[in-house]
Image 1 (tube, rainbow, N blue to C red):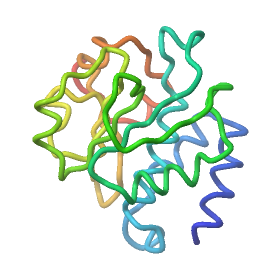
Image 2 (cartoon, rainbow, N blue to C red):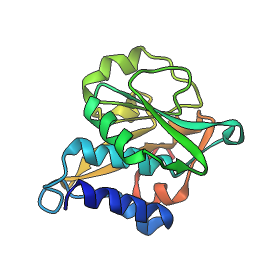
Image 3 (cartoon, rainbow, N blue to C red):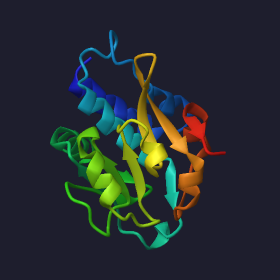
Image 4 (cartoon, rainbow, N blue to C red):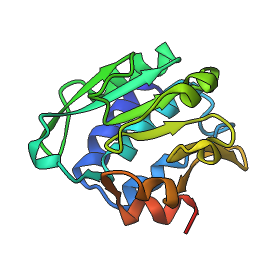
Length: 178
């Protein structure tokens, strides 16, 4: 398994989105995924997760804007794997700063203090690997369960947003705040 294979799997997976394609998200971080770096797995998660979010104002959006804060490697890989791709006909843009145009904001665990001090638009889906991120008001926490990365979604926090999280993502996630 290498990055070329990963890019190929991403291309194939998005031609047939659904529960089967989404289950690839749950990649073991030890033996079978040893050739993948944690930042590569996180970048794939961000891209995959975005496909299962529908914004209320999506018809007026020109692009899905990812704001990646605190992890340049995740940003670089996300930029690479989304190049030339779209989400429901929307272009994909990746930047390394928080602006009012962020549709998805990913904060690395090194940026914990920055999340607490930031006001986020109800339009923005916040994602992080910060421990207890959903307790801090975040929507999706990338958490480690049995040496696998898995999304934990706080529905109470998500309901405050101007978007809907798809049921296929909710099926494989740890769901709290019901």
